[in-house]
Length: 466
Image 1 (tube, rainbow, N blue to C red):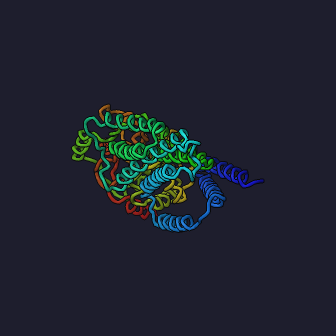
Image 2 (cartoon, rainbow, N blue to C red):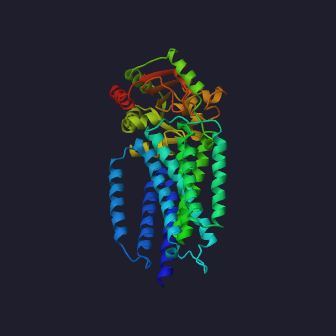
Image 3 (tube, rainbow, N blue to C red):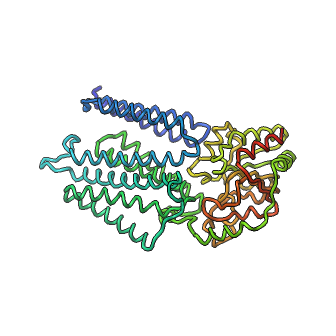
């Protein structure tokens, strides 16, 4: 078997492993095996590429692998789970930037990539591929940088909107596609680099009007963009592994974005046009409601109520992630089960700031997969539950999503915790959620607020149970 066929076979094996990785990552029970398959597939793909006879110098490659590996190892060892959403956004930006740099290298030296026709011009098909890859990559890069800055708190998570914003974005989008078309006719440098610059600006303008509550969708959407950028560059490089990998990432990211939008009862275009949770009047109204009386309890009260309950449904949210309370929460659940209480965990599809955020945290704390349920599987159980223990899940439990047509979150499916006999709500204070609206649940007769740091409160409840 010659080298070309061996390379094609190795890339095929890597592609199969990537598909199996995605299948494994679809369930917490198989996620570790899926992750290992993905790592093995990437190792095969990278190793096969490095061993290609077309590579004549390994200095830069080895240096880059060492530096990149060291940085990745350092980040992986230090990153907190609460920072995972912004880390994912940052990594997406690097994929986009890599696509732009590879497209730029191919444009600057097309002969090295076998992209020239008999007349010495870049093939039209190659121009389409590199221009689309560069455009999507540039949009991914600048959009991901803004997403990172919002999630990290470097800039406000509120939507940034101005008059004529959508028309400007539409105009820039049409202009970018026009430059792609013109690049097929004229391969002058000004055309290519103008396209790249325009795409950078477009990515920035696309993300700034998107509010914090839509960030889970933005993360999965940028994941999709990074995949399509990689696929476009794969065509330019004639690299089947890159094409397949990019297509898998792009399509899976698009599907996940659709699932996230469905979880919020919003259309994809509604998210892209931005502003979810950005209604200042709504936020102001939420602030005014903070003066209304609420029923406040202690850890001892919560422990007494739950220990005498028949069933408790725990609803984790971003507040749990910030406080790193998942381990204490699992211990609390174990103590309740020892007392004969049925314990379940309810997960909203957009709880936290990235898809699957809560699932990962609970898995990290060794919560049994059999006790964790998605919204559609557990919502009907709340009316039979004695206690709903909500820990930082604000917007996804807000009854206003069902009852108030003027609310920015109206129409979003929620966990119907208000139907439980008693709702125990762990929260630092009465501030509104990430969508900028007050939670009507705080003021219900069956709700008891447990104010304080989530981890300390759960630990106090645990001591009271002991």
